[in-house]
Length: 174
Image (tube, rainbow, N blue to C red; front, side):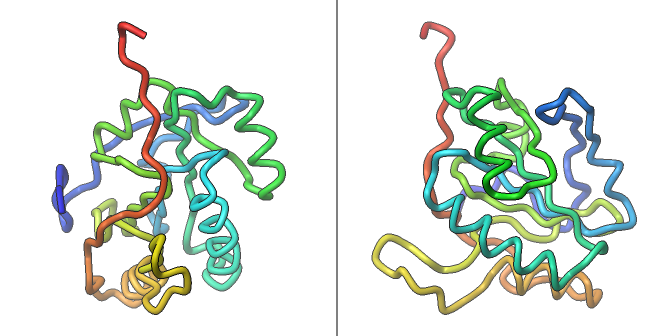
């Protein structure tokens, strides 16, 4: 597993606009657990994750905030807006130049990072252990990680291999 940022250290700070242009800063999450979800409007793995996350969020309530981060270079704002509306997301952050994806070492959608209420990175990786060959999850990594953090414990595992669609990047040469 490649790790660009270590767990149990302060999560790299960033600010990104949502689709309406309002700026969101990671520091704004202090006091709550944040789930950063590198997200896609077209990836079926992200669609499945959105369904799971909706049920988790209803159980966790206001103590956990979900921040979907759209980093695919091929997804325009209108496409993102339609998908966000269809999936009942409050907002989606736009990482048009993949700067935050690069900062966190995100390679896939979905790829999830859990930041505790003090701003420390506590988990990074997959939603669960689902893969192309294993379609029914047996381990729910993200849910277990968030619940551990909410209880003041460190997640185990604290890192898993993400699984999903590659983040689409365009080279400067086109």
